[in-house]
Amino acid sequence: MKKAQGSLEYSAMIALVLVIILVAVFYFGEGIVPKAIKSTQQSEILQYQDRVEIIKSNYESTGAWDSFKTQLISCSSSQCTFNGKTNSIDDPELSYSDVLENAYNKCIYENDLDSCKAIVYVLGD
Image 1 (cartoon, rainbow, N blue to C red):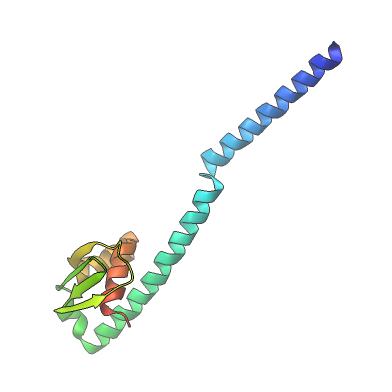
Image 2 (cartoon, rainbow, N blue to C red; image 1 turned 120 degrees about the vertical axis):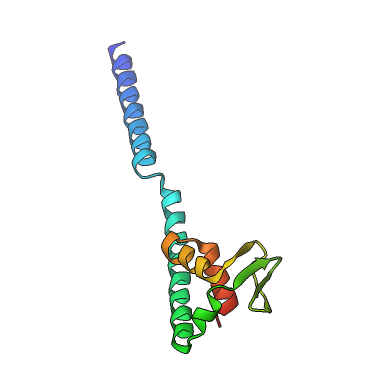
């Protein structure tokens, strides 16, 4: 009987250790998968922010940024409209509307991916 009781206590201790490890991983690490998703999203935002900064500096060098920054960017139904021109985009989910200056500030300072995408769609390549 004592062997069975010792085995049961040993199994309970192992189960308790596993539960503590799982709680610690999800409490402190927010899980492994969410971290990977956050890392991928952060990488995408950084790529767009880099492109936005290049676009802005190109337009600033020609003096066009100041005249464009108060213009409205409007994106929906796979199209973005800016400065009287409409571009088709490959992002049917994007729905966005704001002036260029606000979009830039949201993109760079608030890490708003939709703002970054809208700028790249209307002023990029």
